[in-house]
Length: 112
Length: 112
Image 1: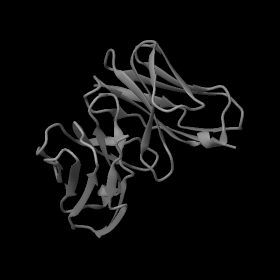
Image 2: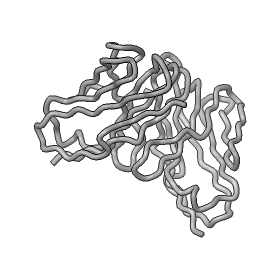
Image 3: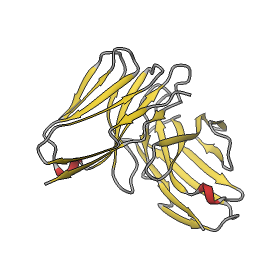
Image 4: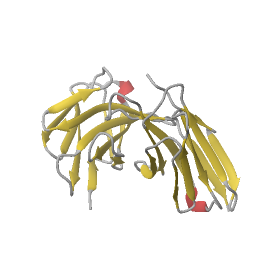
């Protein structure tokens, strides 16, 4: 069966520091991969998605970037974090765009 | 872009009661999905709906894809304490299969 892993589970970073969140999927090939941000008490906002290695689509202009160096690895990065980058970041996968997305357990990012 | 209006925002019910929540939009969607999220975890898919008018059950949960393609509801029958969590509707609009919009969630509390 397919599994999705995100790490770290929690992260506290100072303003201006870099960021790297990692997501990997097992048990499937060539998945579509997604990064979402969830603000407290809110729904999810799609940040990036990828349909293949090296292919990244950005949904919202921001301080973050994404990369997909391997088929089942998706990375969310920032060079300099802002206070507004705090939130709960979720990675998800699907077999293709029209199919339901399945989520990891998220990373709670706090910026001080 | 297409926005999803989810209601109610929160519900406090007694164990054994039935629950109903819904999502509406001013635009049509090709797919409607319902997820449940528990604290510190990612959303878990409950039901996926692909056709207007479709009615699908998953145990005590029943969801329907509205005929107009602009709404969906989720019913939970005979609620139990483990139903506690935040329920999100999500919809995939026409034009981009990788775009998924989320409602703001319904927070369900079940009193034993």
